[in-house]
Structures are given as structure tokens and as C-alpha cells.
Image (cartoon, rainbow, N blue to C red; front, side):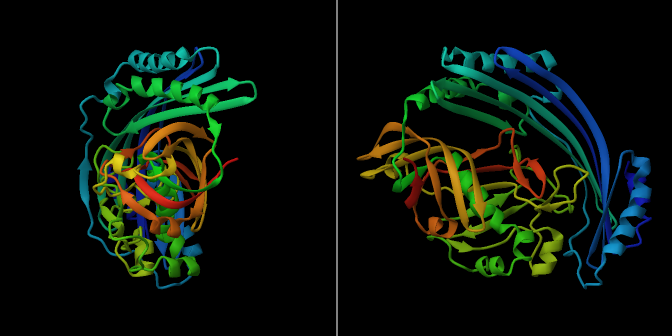
Length: 454
């Protein structure tokens, strides 16, 4: 393969070109209600060529390695047609030659298909114990093996194996016109062990969905809130992480001013990180799709904006260093700037100290949300009232909204219990979804959060 791709790149008569070739095998097991709805094994392979010439990009795909040379010629022609004549380049990096093999205790590829069906059925059976009010359940097992190859005209040649394994289970309950949903998901690159031992979480999904039927709607207002690691992780990913992606920043004059390195965004005790080099996490990779090693990047360090996330191209345009965040969801997409493992660093507060307030909300999990530049809206999976330092009753339909920069300044305590989450989903951007990412946080406490409710 190396000889074929290197030979193909000799056809590039442009400033720069690279080839990504992938072989992917995906196994899915899906239960809906009591029925096994789907068992499938899918295999795909193919490659993409990206060419760059004087400010213009060209992109062409191919199916078989022997077709790579023709795709290089096509992509080069397209790059020349798209050229603006601009004096733009890729930020320089050292060429890399490497092979990265997976190393996990239990390789999901070697687990019999029957065992994968059994584990999905096992969790789904737990969901079905909820009684008559449970209207439907869904359980998905998935593993995906990717052999990812990168070669460039600069001399890089990287072969990297990735193995994602995960489980998701959800339940829907109904009482009259009141319909509620609860779910949980686990997924990373630690092998088949990732999907084992989640019986308690499946039982919690059943309890939550039934409790939500009885929970009162939250009263709208301004609250001090304690965010659990899941929704705090979603917050830093969605509300701030996307703002840090340089392909947004360099095109937007307003955002360039807002996201100027050195700006103070939070108190000294607050730091936020993107780190694709954490092995085993859903968002881990050894090298990005520019051939740059993944690395730890402080987005905010000690309250100060420290860095943006970059590809080699955006790094050149903004006069900064590449951060290893150029990623494409599959070979047939061009790489864009994406997050990897994004989280808030822990500090020293215990959970008991965080909830030691007269009145507030403990907000748990995230159902989804929207962001528009610095404005955000998130829906929580569930929440509880905090009264005189104690967690009391569950409430539902909790919607958090606000300005990300004001919210960062209102974080007044950070817990000591950092957790990272992956799952079967991922991040969406530029029509590429779901890209494998992780996010997380310790518990954090935030003042003056606007909560929508009744």
C-alpha cells in the first residue's frame, strides 16, 4: 500500500497533496422493544485525495488503491482551477512515518457475534422491567474498526488503527398525554470491556423515566446551578469549544475580536482543554488528517484565552501553531477543524461543598441544545431542587440559556471529580456527523443561570 500511494502522489503538480485511505468494518445490533430489530456487519473502503495550490483546494475520491494516481491528477486540476493566486500555505511541520496499532484487553473484533447480541439483549431486558408505563425501549450495540492511512507529498506515511466500541439504551414512558424519555450511552476505544458492567445504569434509566412522569415542571427563573459532569462537558464543547475552532474565527471579524488570545474569560481557577492524545477515549487519535500528532491544547488557562484549535491551513492564516485538530468524518470528506477530547480541568471542591447553598438546581445530563456564536440553549435530562444544602425533589423540562462568556465568569466553584464521556454519538459540523469526540468536566457551580420552565 505504501508504495502505491507514494507512487500516486508523484502525479501531483501542485504545492501540496495528501491521500487518506480507509478500510472500515462496522457491527451493529439493535433491539426495539422485545424484538431483535437488526444485526448487521458492514464493510467499506476507499480513499480521498486533497490538493492545495495558491489558495485553492481540490478534492477527489477513489475506491481501490490502484485508482489513487488518477484521483491525484483530478484533485490537482481542481486545486488549480480553484486557485486564487493568494500567498497562502500550510504551516510547516516535520514529516511523520509511523504505524499505530490498537492495544486493548479484549478486542471487539474477536468477540463472537452471538455474545454481542446477548449483551444488547441483556440490557434491553432490564429496560423492559419498568412495567406497563414503559411504551418502548431501544438498545444499540456497535463496534467499528478503522484502518486509517495517510500519505503526503511532504513524505509523511502513517498507518493508524482505531477501534470504537459502545452501547446505548433508552426507554420511553407514558402516562396519559405525559411522555418522557431517558437514556444513557457508553463508548470509547478500550475494547469490548467498555460495554460490560452497566446494569446499574440501565436500571437508572428505568427509574429516571418513571420518576420523570411524576416530576413537576421547574419554575422559570434565575438560579444558582450545579452542573453534573455530563452537561458541564456538553457546555464546554458546544458553547465554547466550537467558538475555539479557527476555521470559524479567521473568517469572522467579530469573532476574531472576541476570541483574541490573552482575553480574560473566567476566574483564575478555570481552565479548559482539548486533548486528542488521551488513549482509550472516544475522541482519541494519534495523528490528525494533516498528519500532525494529537496534543494537549489549553483553550483557557487560568481564566485567560490561551489558544485556538487549528489545522495546518488555519494555523498559517492566523500566524499560530497547528494543534492537531484537522479531522474528517470519513475518507470521502475533506478535513476541517474539529475538537477531540474537550473538558474542564478539576479543582478541589467536593460535591457537598458545591451544593451548600440555600436554594438552587442540580442539573444532570443533557438532551441537546443550540448555540449561535456566544449564545446557548441546553435542555437537561433531569434536575433536582437544592434546598438548604440538600438535594430534594426531581423537576423536569429544565432549559438553560445564556451568554457563554457571562456564564464562564459566573462559575464560582469547580469540583474534584473529573469524568470524560464518549458514547455512540458524536459531534456535527459542516455536514460531517457524528465525528467521534469526548467531553467532560467535574461538577461545577454557576451563579445567575436563566432557567426556562413553567
